[in-house]
Image 1 (cartoon, rainbow, N blue to C red):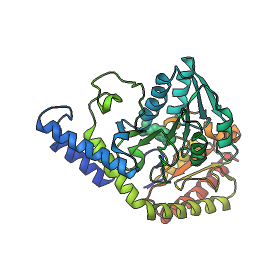
Image 2 (cartoon, rainbow, N blue to C red; image 1 turned 120 degrees about the vertical axis):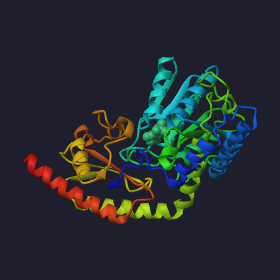
Image 3 (cartoon, protein in one colour; image 1 turned 60 degrees about the vertical axis):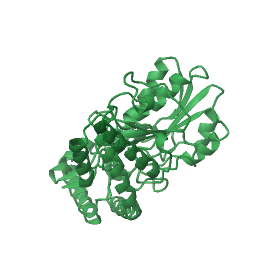
Image 4 (cartoon, rainbow, N blue to C red; image 1 turned 90 degrees about the horizontal axis):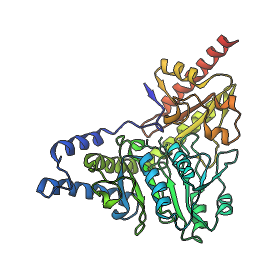
Amino acid sequence: MIYFDNSATTKPYKEVLDSFVKVSSDYFGNPSSLHSMGGQAEKLLSQAREQVASLLKVKANEIYFTSGGTESNNIAIKGAAFLNQHKGRHLITSSIEHASVREAMEYLEQEGYEITILPVDKNGIVSALDVEKSIRKDTILISIMQVNNEIGTVQPIEEIGKILKNFPSILFHVDAVQAVGKIPVSLYENRVDLCSISAHKFHGLKGTGALFIRDGLRLTPLFSGGNQERKMRSGTENVAGAVAMAKALRMTMEKSGVGIAEMKIIQNLLRRGLTDMEGIQIHTPERYTAPHILNFSLIGIKSEVFIHALEQKGIFVSTTSACSSKKKSPSKTLLSMGVPENLADSAIRISLSFDNTEEEAKAVLIAIEKIANQLRKVMK
Ligand SMILES: Cc1ncc(COP(=O)(O)O)c(C=O)c1O
């Protein structure tokens, strides 16, 4: 089995699963309970918070545990919009955001907010200048992802952050779900106010994640309930999940030095191999790209057909993003880049983790060439 679908989700590390099981069975108290079992759970939760914070180089009181990227994005965007509606009702985002950002924005639009959706260039990159030009007196929030989940492009977060230093009242949200462990996430330096992360993208467990909320900033909470997570996210905390996420993040960061270098070698190997094949168009640009994603089209072959043929050989890849890959509509990111619909319909995404090897990449290249030739013969 060759698993090349790590942007959809990663395999949890064994140590991560072990710590989840240990905390779930030995420290199952509710952190809000007043007795010692509650105290122990509370202590573990605070330790996990401190670890996640120190790995992201922020303060522990700036980390709020959530159920993952989707929830963090929703709390950040809707929570900021609801709180600041008296200051203004204009938000800025890009045309290549994850559905959890895009649809949160669409929801706000229906509630009477105005949304500017910035285009991307042919390489799938938003212009920081465009961001600056669309700022208005009533702009309250800018939400731009750090790494695109479909083609892997890195957005100019640092430049946008620099521009926003002149606009202290505008909140800056960054969806860093695909960035963590692959490229540096520098929150203070880039003047980020809100940042979403998701553990299952870095070998943690599904249903666990965090939202960074800059010290002193409050949002309108989306859930009513027991006021956990300092009132920002009601609901009994997933202590074992948070501890497991902290472990996954630590292990990911420890491996990232060597891991990223190896990923780049594999990504280049795949790129060179695909460039040498006939009838392939690579969509992921060479520059401003994260090391783990490579998106390309097999001209004339529908992605679903190709994915199933690869699966027959034990190779797992994706069409576009996981959440939309079961829908038949072509990738919004590719269409925004100006890729024609018929090519976007043939797009395949390979996404790597630190566990993948060059041998796997070579085997995948051989399989791609063989299947493409076979399918093309059948289609003639
Ligand atoms: C860029 C991006 N944002 C948000 C999400 C949603 O994260 P989760 O699956 O934890 O809800 C994903 C997941 O694919 C993603 O790639």
